[in-house]
Amino acid sequence: MKAVVLVGGQGSRLRPITYDVPKAMVPLRNQPFIGYMIDFLRDAELDGAVLSLGYLPDPIQRYFAGRDLNGFSIDYAVEDNPLGTAGGIKNSEEYLDGDSFVVVNGDVLSGMDLRVAIARHKESDALATIVLTSVEDPTAYGLVEVDHDMLVHRFIEKPAADEVTTSLVNAGIYVLEPAVLDMIPTGQEVSIEREIFPYLQAEGRLRAYVSSSYWRDIGTPRSYLAASHDILSGAVGTRNGFDYLHVEPSVVKGKGVKVLPPVSVAAGCILESGATIGGRSSLGRRCKIGEAALVEGSILFDGVEIESGAMVRGSIIGLGARIGQEAIVRGLSVLGGGCVIGEGNVLDQGIRINPRVVLSPQSISYS
Ligand code: GTP
Image (cartoon, rainbow, N blue to C red; front, top):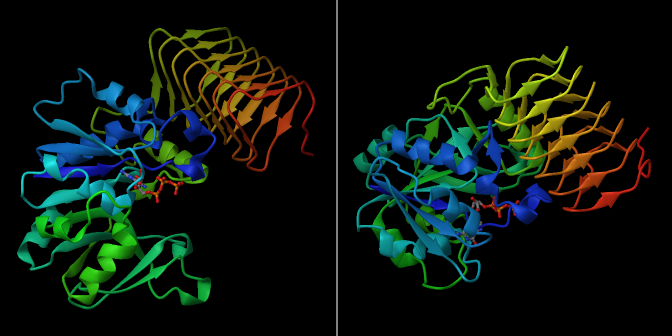
């Protein structure tokens, strides 16, 4: 059995990071997200994945080129124009072998045992089974109401607070029968959630499987940071070993440097004297943290430079960005790749700076 992994979306909620890096390639504890997804599918003993690509396909294909996955196959179905979630599945059909198959949104991190959902699906006469998960605030998601026998009864898209009748939402993980492919027109933009599932529901052929395991999507800066924190603290994704204090041997540390777990510091980083890398941070390769600078609860992509006395807290800093002396970046700020934030700026309140923007010293201050 194979899986179709939907990774063709633009990831607009994660901009400006996704202007340069597809959502599937954003790092979590220094491994691209797609690596966790493939581990998840291999743990379920699937035979391979078809990556349904559209937006920025090259970095994803490069990541898998020459990578040995122990017989787990990777195929690519690349769209010239966005085909939506169902259209992306239809476009992958030639790589599926006529068997039931799994579909996953390429931005969900799950600790569930997919094998159980597959087994339940096969015991039923459903054409599709949707995995559901319970979330604290379902208003940002699509609610799914189920009957006592787990048949899907109703969908409620992004409900207002007084319309919330259940905490169960679509987890973006499905098991489908090949007959579903025949319901999707070729080469057209079609949504599985809005067009195919309601039809299957009306026919009584759509079931649900509720998972109580870890689940999170990485679609927004807040959820991406939270997922990174969860991985750093071992809540999920520990297949390749786990270490609260993961500092590569090549990291150079000056005098009085503090590195507080859980943390991950990749190869080639330089931590100058008096720097503090606070818990729940992930530093990509070759980052440089200047004297007495502080990084806490943040994700730094490769090659980021934080100059002396600067502070980065609860934020996401794109590839090769530079934060000047004494600057402060906090409060879920997101900086695109190659930004230069001049000395003494204060960025806060979820500010987003586009890639390669240069801010002159002390030009922005939130107080
Ligand atoms: P936002 O723009 O922030 O909503 O993110 P997104 O583009 O990822 O959209 P969304 O989260 O709704 O998509 C769910 C999953 O479907 C993601 O893994 C997307 O990569 C994928 N996806 C969305 N649109 C398409 C598409 O047109 N083609 C393919 N192949 N995948 C898609």
